[in-house]
Image (cartoon, rainbow, N blue to C red; front, side, top):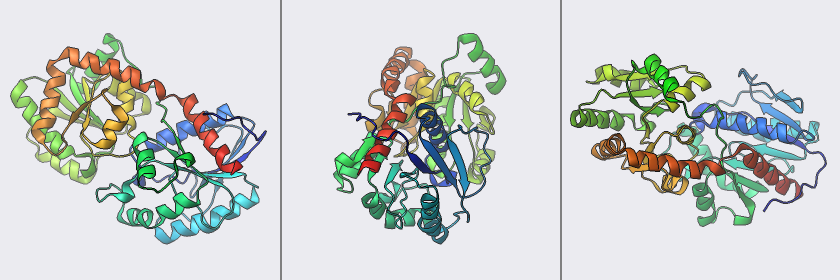
Length: 381
């Protein structure tokens, strides 16, 4: 239930220290999209963006935003603790902040200011994780403390909310479910525009697409093997495109891959270019075992592109019947699901229809309103 706002004006400090390597894929775009909508929707409130280094992105902040840089850069465990527990409290006092919003689930334990945490994953509870070792250890040690310290919590998926509740880490009344909005650049293309995109990026051929960071945690090895299996069975001219940032392991493996001439790597695409490549895809295939925010999947859905994902509890909770599920550990199963989408047009259409119903709740206005409610809950506690 949305409660009335009790503050005519709040001063809200926001941790914008975001480290790409420590967050789920698409997290930075999601966060700044959310902040853009939040500051636009609530112009009477003042926002303090706290960075640990000068911001070098291309986003323009609203008039009610004051960017503040607090050194040192948080490149390790001790610096991270110092930054949150000494630098941040000082800024909160200086600017007479009403509530502190941390966008990566980390609290300052040395301030009495009310805090709202945005929790984007539960990787610290699992042996499988894609963070740096020191980050995982830090979260595993301190996350229970942060969850207790926070006055309110925003979870970016129903799976995360249930995990926090069922493991008795957080009381249900303390958590708001925050569905991520989807960038408006991602939308369907008509046939002629889609054909032009295929001509530009895929030699005019249809293609499966993986979008996001390409590393061992993306399960690209099994996806490449599945594509080989698919090509042997179907004898088609379909390509496999990877759009994103590859690590060195992927680049080396691609050099020795037997069908490397039928795989294309697209790096350095703008958001609009990524949107076009997504909308022109035959299907999105993402066999990674993620448990947090996965924007490329939602983006594909908004583009009316069928999606294949790993069969995990988190995925089923998030996407219900709007995707095809595959066993990420079984190459043949990934390939069979690719063949299912390729051969069964009615199945593909049904997935798109189900996805259209699902993504109605992924609305930026609703997301911003829910987050503001979470901030109010913290400030009023």
